[in-house]
Image (cartoon, rainbow, N blue to C red):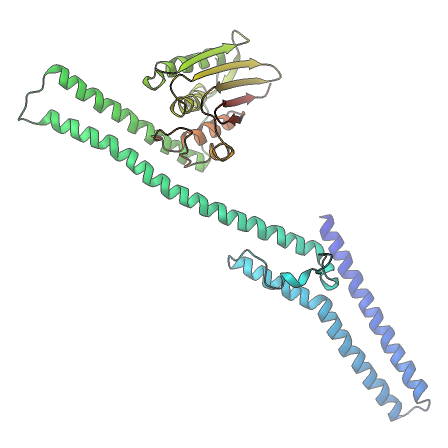
Length: 359
């Protein structure tokens, strides 16, 4: 707002001074004509008329140079932005002096506007690159999810075909094995489809909250027990610590459970065998749920992309079987519950994820 006021005042002052100088120049020309030709007449009038014509033409050229050309430059710039070209026109090199790198005199009048256009161009170009990167990641994600859905379907179809064949009589143990595999693959598909549904809800901003008064310590304990019983966690060490016995608060246990489940499963899947994963509940100046591990850790690029949709990065050589939506969903669920989530990590040292809620 202040920059707009300064720009307006500068333009008004420039126009007023320009016209005052024009009037002064015309008066000077008239006075000079009367001095050169003291006697009134056509000769004196001609000198005065030609003099005023020269002054007016000079004024138009100078005024156009100081105001018209910068405006033309900015209009060209805005036109490029409207057409999706987010860099400044070629005249950018002419805006600044070579030695000091400052705006040239005729552009200083529009200093704030030029700075705003530069900032807008940079932000639009950055957004364009970000959209391009996200689209590329989204294409890779679609290919990955298609493969993830196709793989369990192949197993389900194969085992069901074997069970339905009339050429062989399967015994009870074999049937149980096939049905167990079919159920496992169906559960995996259900998890993938659940992630997709949650993703659509996040995009529409329609996460339903069902708040009930619950014991957060007990809720977290159940989640840790469920994860510890998951076959994927059989070679990891899970521990739970809390500095309080119970914390009664209004929360959506389903959303919180889903978020913490995603965070813990991610810590298990992307860390080597033998990794210790500790969950701590701390009530001090608010509430923190800290998930820390002594596993592989992450670099800055992984940390930056951890909660982005479609990110399927991994800190191990294992293939990722997720949708790339789990961590993004976890963060959005935590935010929907009024909390926040912060990640710190170092390669080969471990990762710490802090979920915090206000007091």
